[in-house]
Image (cartoon, rainbow over all chains, first blue to last red; front, side):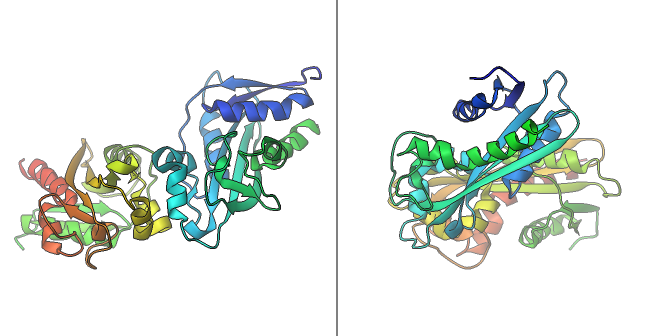
Length: 189
Length: 189
């Protein structure tokens, strides 16, 4: 790892996410600091809006160091009108991967999209960086690495799910793309 | 209808709900006035909390006449860990009745609960009245009256769904029970 150029505070309660992003930013001299703070999530149709509103509410929290980021992500399945979307985590806890497979039983159109929005605030400007990856929903649970919906998501052009091939996820995931957009913006200065 | 004892403003965008409640309160001399105002819904595990927060946010709206009410309701299915719960409307729009049936395919334990919470504010006190009705999830779509999940819900002790027998719904529904608790409270004075 290169010398530390920047400390970046990541507000999240999800350690999987934290470690994923940590590995992505470390080579760029960014030390990611875990900040396990709770924040309100609004009801919205897009991850971008959820991330933006989370930053707005966290910007008012005294003592929270800057720059900080939050991340909101979701799986949007076309045949289910975008379900589970911005409620992906909640739906995962309630109905799980088996629930998604039950809803998709017999569905021919299996296209879906993973979306990740990173909200960033340095005390002056609020920015949101959004990455997406297209793919399809597998017909069974595939693989054991990754987390949440990874075992059901096969990125376009590949034959493996994100949970079967972690290199795939770390190189072309929605979260990776959002992180890249953020790096481009904050390291350019 | 008896003479008008009270005008009550119902903030909702759901005309089905409005008419249901209107029929319940009219015999008690309450004129329900439809107020189609949007309000933020928080992410919460209970209808009570959603209703309470909605009232708190509406209490700050200038020009909104009082007393006013809001109503939040949901279907909580035990085999699905409470899904769709406080996101019932959203899940209905995304996956519909067929989605619920797919999730419940083969499930032996079909118990569920309809919950309705009415938030009331008269300018001084905020109160929340919650009614529930126990029942089971039908194995197919049954009946055409009512709305949302009514065709899937068979109240405990009966053989018909809420959509097959509107009298059933108007006499023993979760919403009816919440309305009764509210009437008891506001008409006692």
